[in-house]
Structures are given as structure tokens and as C-alpha cells.
Length: 112
Image (cartoon, one colour):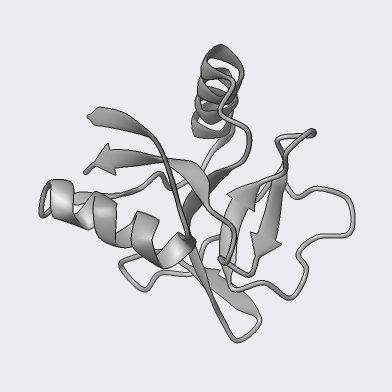
């Protein structure tokens, strides 16, 4: 498994496209366990990234991953999920939140 922290800031759709352009099997980081969530937080803290985009797009009441599977693991911030379409981390709590995708943020690509 390889990870790439992109320190450029892009809106959600461009971050998704950038990961996919790096390698055919590269996607935004999918947080599907405490271990991966803690890994993401360690990157956020170590490199002072601020919020980062995560893999997951709203589909009806659910969020789905890039393979179309319903995401079942979340570490939501208070009051989440909001009405946003994309997933990202909150600026201060680093917990997950739904985002419109319109803000430019850093992101982690994971080679699957």
C-alpha cells in the first residue's frame, strides 16, 4: 500500500481526478476503520494539513466509495452528516463531515 499526501489544495472533484491521474488504482483515502482514521489524523497533525478530502460521495441517504459500495465506518463530527455531497475532515476536531466539495483542501491518495 502506498500513500501520497498532496499538499496542493483542490476542490473535491479535482482532488478525485488528481488521485486517479496518478495511477489507475489510486483513489482518495478511504477511511474504513479506526486504524485508517488514526493514520489520517497522524498525517493531518504531522504535516499541519488542515482539513483533507476523503473518499466517499453521497448517494441518497448513504455515502458510497469509488467501487459503489456503501461506506459503513464513520467518525462523524457533532451534527454530521450534514447535507454535503463529499467527505472531508473538520478543521479543528479532525472528525468526519459532509462537505459541498467547493472548498479547496489538501488530500491523501492511496494506491489500492
